[in-house]
Image (cartoon, one colour):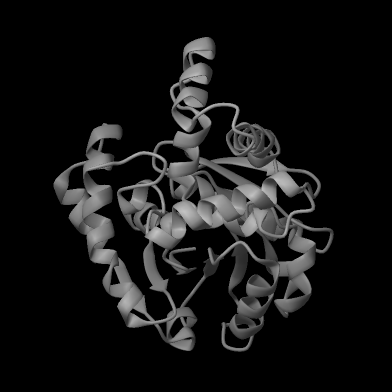
Length: 282
């Protein structure tokens, strides 16, 4: 599978695009309009020094070659016309993902395999909207994909086992370590472990127990972990925890969602990728 289309160019979508191109794939980056896509050039300049810092084989020449393998398009039919595989990385809302796949199903080639990068939603809740449920499954990436390179592969009961293995192999080809998940699980492996941890930190904050800085310091000093929960929130970005929390049955998580909207999202502080979240970044 040489030709990839990524739907959505946010924090994680842009990382998937760049990592796949760095690994030699031809990538089309799709988003809703050309104004959004025009921002990708700055995103590549942000990612290049991180690759040089973290990957021993990275060189300026290889990074420029990666950029050369990326094409942008705001025309969905054009974006998917040659795709062997499509990875969707649109906002973490079931209705948006369902609507997106309905539109993709109408224009994608018959050969194309469909993957969602959803971090919490089940493939079986999206599969009926794809028009090809046997070729639909999840391929979930962790943030900072070039270094934290897990690729969680999770099908639904209707996924073709051969397609499942093709996607696991594709994950290897773009530098991921495929994690085969044998049955559907909300949150998969990574977020089944991570989300309760982040929720606990959010509860400490909104209840006024301690500041983000002191919560992070406590975790890092006491456990030796390299990052604290609010540093992780900054890497994830504010939009995902807001979307997950605003309709939560847990009043504390709803309160946290409103807090980050009021204090961060509404002010343009979207996390590390924007230069500011709970912390400031260069």
